[in-house]
Length: 224
Image 1 (cartoon, one colour):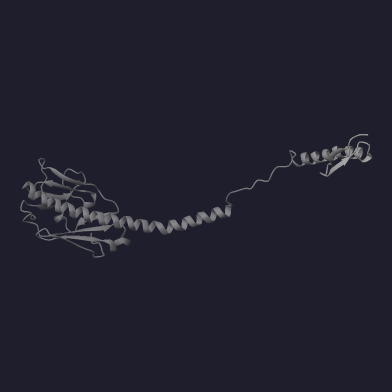
Image 2 (spheres, one colour):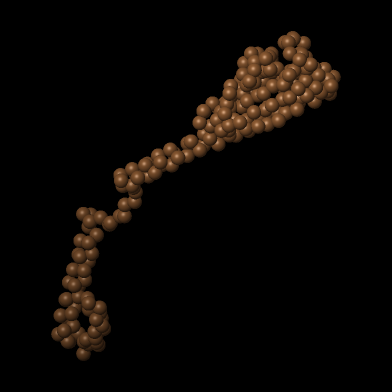
């Protein structure tokens, strides 16, 4: 008599049977067939013809067009504000620099005990008949150009603005060793204007009186 045999069917059911039991041979013949069918189904499921699903990420054409339209709208709103801010900063800087150059010319005249002149210059060497936005210099000596004169300060040209005196006769400012303007100086007005007429409300005016005192005003209109 054979000892009983324990096993698992293809469906996962635990069974115990003796070798003389007819069901033992039937289960034994059925189990491999069921396992073979399971393996065939798995191979068919992962065959070359079937590919795993992959999620696609990206933008549609409509989404891209919406983004481009929004960028264009924001740029249209931002460009005028950016230009306005740059112009305001250029005017403020020019006013401060011109005022500082006048004060520098006055203090240097007293320090070195010789006349010092501030005048427009587009070459950084001599006084020229140009507007101040093209640059200006502070040099020793009276208003006439002289090869022996020393350049004490050279200011570079400016953009987005115009700087000029209301009269061409007052484009040169000479300070004497006593700290006062030259005897023929009757006062002058220098305007700092934007190149864009829309921004004329930003105009700043420096007024230099006969004693060399400087005052700042905002007339809201450019006259040069």
